[in-house]
Image 1 (cartoon, helix red, strand yellow):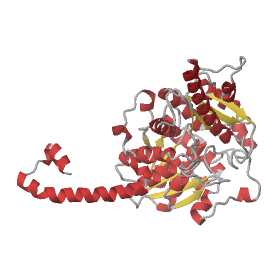
Image 2 (image 1 turned 90 degrees about the horizontal axis):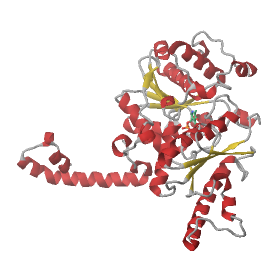
Image 3 (image 1 turned 90 degrees about the vertical axis):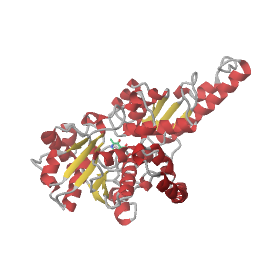
Image 4 (image 1 turned 60 degrees about the horizontal axis):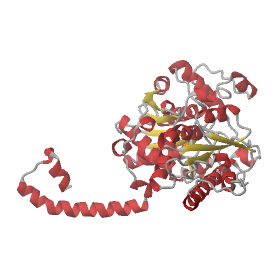
Length: 438
Ligand SMILES: Cc1ncc(COP(=O)(O)O)c(C=O)c1O
């Protein structure tokens, strides 16, 4: 405190008063430091910076991630009498909210030394996170290896490969199976790290980067899917359990929302996949103002609604054995889950709403027609949540939600008339009457 006053011309004070205040100030500073450091040790995520724009000098593509506009959704605001604002995450360079997570996961891993320049980030994902990692990794001098189930649309691997990632398609099996795509991704990172260590050892011993035994290269075989010749080690991104995901939103998206609304918001709502977005933003906003209401909107097949409202992880579809293998029993992609992740556990929520596929489809068409917003399925579900929240809070409130990605990523299902017709989801509403039910 004393140092700040001395360094700040506006803080110039009379010398006598300053001397008298100095003792009080230094004891107060000491006390607040002790309190703060105790607090910090209990809450490890607080050790990180809260303003990455000021503290981390990003450049190139990484600097283009985040700081997205907060758009007033005119149609929903006018219809509800609330200010409904959507954070336009689809404008990130990799096209989704997951760019922030990719940046944060890679930066933390590089800072901790778990990932090195030239190393490979692995992830088991067919969704936006894989695309964001593939987009962002080269900006940090890293590579990306993605493991996906082989029943996922071929365009997904084509996009990832076009972005320079290597893609391994594996047969779909249960998460408990060692060959589930997430488990394979974890294993590939370990293999890459082992292979890199062996190569370094071989280099030292023989002045050569590879050991050849009878013309055969055993470590190359182990690391084959990742290409071992220039393998510098691997790092498993682990978006569900890696708290860098939560952190990206706690110290980046949340503060942006706070700044953009000048702290004048009443509520926030979003759906959860890994839970990183809703957890990071809700926790940041609640710390700024505990009166801000934070809600989850949950798609069909997900157990989170019951977890938040009744404390029990349960979904009707799961209980009846109706749950689809992949993804959950919903057309919305990237959201809904039936287990508690470390990221979701960080959320501070006041309640939850359920949303249906039909509502998400109708919402997306309503926003396209009235606002020119072409958004994906999770964004549409988030907007359903925003209207539900506006209905329960009443007019005069400011509500923020997330526009996770664009409709471009959803042409084969969510924005495909034939697919919707086949699933009885053809939109027919003329206004917002599909949200009339309580
Ligand atoms: C398009 C899209 N929207 C929303 C989410 C959910 O975000 P989170 O994982 O932070 O809960 C995801 C997650 O993968 C996603 O891919």
